[in-house]
Length: 302
Figure 1 (cartoon, rainbow, N blue to C red):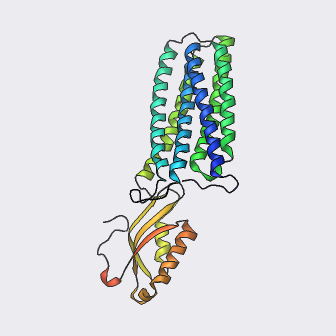
Figure 2 (tube, helix red, strand yellow):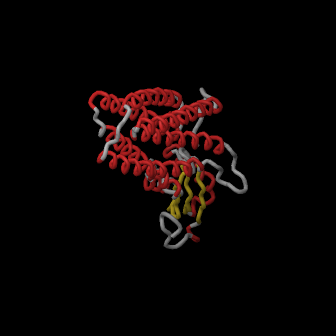
Figure 3 (cartoon, rainbow, N blue to C red):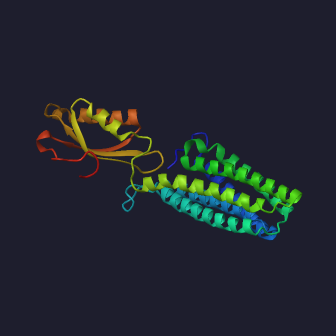
């Protein structure tokens, strides 16, 4: 779930994303058709990369709409995590595309086909213009959303890939270096695989209810244990529902002498969580020392 900036209403952001989707969709069709006509696998590789970005834009557009829906009886946590599910699909597709392009590029290096260099240069130039436009549309939106920032960086990388395609077309025109086209294809595929493999881990971690990567869980437990009236914590869970919302669930053992000041202790715990660790959502179960869980593990339900 992304935080909206007051300077740009959600409707304006949605319109920008919609424009970027249409631009990338038209470009993808043009590059695929041109790549087939010109015999350039690099153009088709760039088109598939653009298509993956268009899919990411569509996912972001739909997820922004759905994520605004309030929680209900069927989805008590709300709909924000749909962005994470969609991202997993997108990154998995990226990896499959990357592997396919590496295979095809390798086959074409062995037997380079005839390539129409001017088509490669012209379509590469158009792609560069569209990629630059999309990056410009998402630049001012990327500061408040990890998803939009990823889209911005992807489009920036697309622009660099388009530059590589143009250079390849020029080398084919000037020196008939047909092996350059599949070599550039493998380079683009390698970058696609790098993006997919490095990003998919965080997505899987979130879906597995892993602890937020930017939170030192041991430091949180130590800080809460040092609060006056707190003896121990166990059955602790850290997770996050969306990009920015870290949550904590824990059993807290309170001293007998502090039991009549439970509300005050709870306030200090929640204040420490929010101010020191940016954890704004916590569910706490308090235990009396006479009724404590025996041999309870710090993390999990053990």
